[in-house]
Length: 248
Image 1 (cartoon, rainbow, N blue to C red):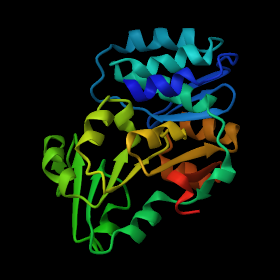
Image 2: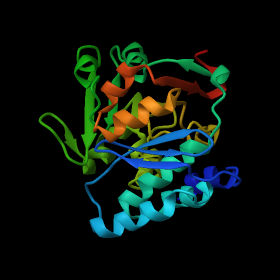
Image 3: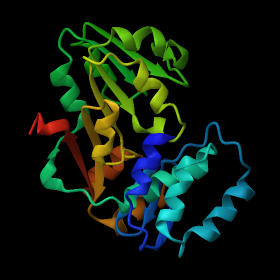
């Protein structure tokens, strides 16, 4: 996957993994920093005993080596890889705006055609403002559309929000090719690598998170906390980076 390879090539290879944690919702790697990625159990092609073998080899291993797991088609392994990538990226917070992506999308929603790849908590609020809102999901809930419908809705969209889990399941580059050049495209979620190389692929805003309190974050991940709970702990900061600083 070209975009991930470009991000990995830039990473510092001098850091090792200090701690690796997989919770019900989130996977975390601690190396230079603490990086997060979604724990994706669906689609997994490997058995639990094979997954356990990764854990023994992750801690103490080069974080850049683990980052290369992101290129794997095995979902659990790719989650480890994205977390490792995010643990090695040094985010310049001066280049970012502290901003919840859902709030930003509400500003962009009025009378627009909006596609959301992934079912996010802010979807119901967006429905009140958007001209049309198409939520595209691999596992659709009531009112969502199937992943196959992306080819029908993305070309019609003014604003497109893409879950960064598409980097894990290897659908990102296929989806971005369906997006109109003139549309505003946002990559979002804690899995998001805060790397400007994504702007080269047509993304206009990158919305992710930075862990400020590692101990608290890991404890809650181990206890099965979802992201809403993690945010309430105050241990994580939501940041958005805009192409050419268009919003800052």
